[in-house]
Length: 458
Image 1: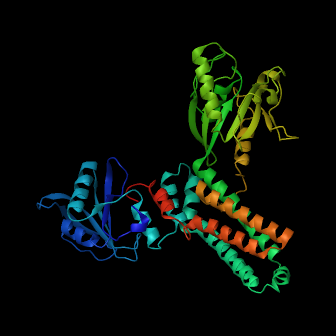
Image 2 (image 1 turned 135 degrees about the horizontal axis):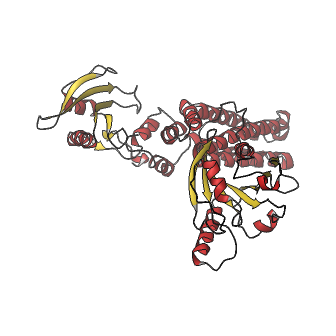
Image 3 (image 1 turned 90 degrees about the vertical axis):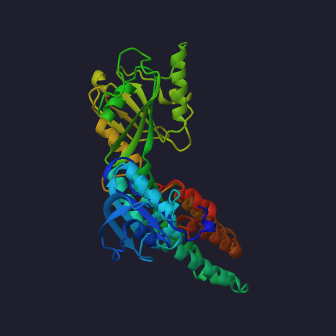
C-alpha cells in the first residue's frame, strides 16, 4: 500500500499462522467490516462480545460455525471498524471464508497493512509497529521481553522525551539568533553547551540500549576460524550441545561451512564452523576455504581457535594477517587442548592491542563457561542487566547515530566558533534524525519499506 494514497476501504486477511490449527481468524478492517461480517453470519454482535454464529457463503450454504467479534473504531487496533471471524483452523476452510469476504466487497490486505493503518490513524508509532513484528519473530524469552517493552512504548517514550528536549533547546537557540547584538552572551549565559552535552549523554545511553536490544533479537554471527585440526568442529559441537559436525584426527575433515543456531542466556548465536585455513592443492578443500573466507566477511565476532597443546601455537597476528576481518568485528583467540598441555582454563582480557584470549579444551568443555560469559559480555549483556532494554532495528540505530553526530557537531560549532546559526542547523538535523525513529518525521518510502516486511494478517 502506498501510504501517501491511503483511502479507508475495507481490507481482509487470514490473521493466524499458516497450517492446520484448532482455531483460525479472519480479520477485517474498514467501513464495510461489520456489514461483510453480518452478510456471512447473519449476526451483528455487541461491541467486544463474542457471538456464536454459522458462517454461510453467497449461496446460503454453511461453511463453518464459529465466533464473531466487532471492535468499533476508533477504539480498535487499526482505529477503524474491525471485525474478526473465529473459525476452525483448516487452511482450505479459512481460504473459503476469506474468499467470501472478498466477494462481499473487501480487498485482500497487503503485508503489514493492518499495522500500517494503526500507525496512520495514530494508534501506534513506527517503533511500536515494528515491535509487533519483532514480538512475532522473537527466538528467545529475552527477545520477547524486549519486544514487549517496545510495544508498550518504553522505546518510544524515551525517544519522545529526548525529542522534546531537543526541540526546546532548538527553539531557544533560534530565538536568541533574532537578537544578534545579544546572541553570543545570551547563549553563553544560558549554558547551551552544557545542555548539548547533556542531550548527547542521554542519547548515548539510549543508543547503547538500542544496540543491546537489536543483539537480543537478531543475535550475533559467530564464525570459528583457525588452522586444520585445531578443534573447531569439537568447539561447535560443545556450544551446540550435540554432534553437529564430524570430528576426526584427519586434517581437512571439515570442507564446507556448518551452521548452528543456539542461545546463551537469551543471546541468539548463529555459529559457523569453517574449513581449516591453509595452503592446499585439493580442489574441494580450496572451495571450503573460499566459503570460509566469505563467512568471515559477514561475521560479528571471530573465534580464532589455535592448537595450544604443546605451547607452539602460531602467533594470532601472524595468522590473522591473511584474514580479511570486517570493520567492527570482535576477535577472541582460543588456545585449545589445555587438557593435553596440562594448563588450567583461564581468560586473559585484551591488552596493548592484542585481542582477549581464553585457554580451554573443546574436548572436555574446560573453559567453556568462560567463553559463554565472554560472548555475553562482548555483546553488552551482563548478569546484572536491569531488564530495561527494548527491541530495536538497524534503521533505529542509524537514526540515533545520525542524531548523535549532529549534536556533537553542534557542540563543536558553539565551543570553537560561537556560531549560533550553525548550532541551530545541527539541532534541526538532529531533530530530523530522531523524528525518523518513531515516525514523527518520515517519508512514504520509509513507511513502505517497513510495513512490506510484515505478515499479511498484521
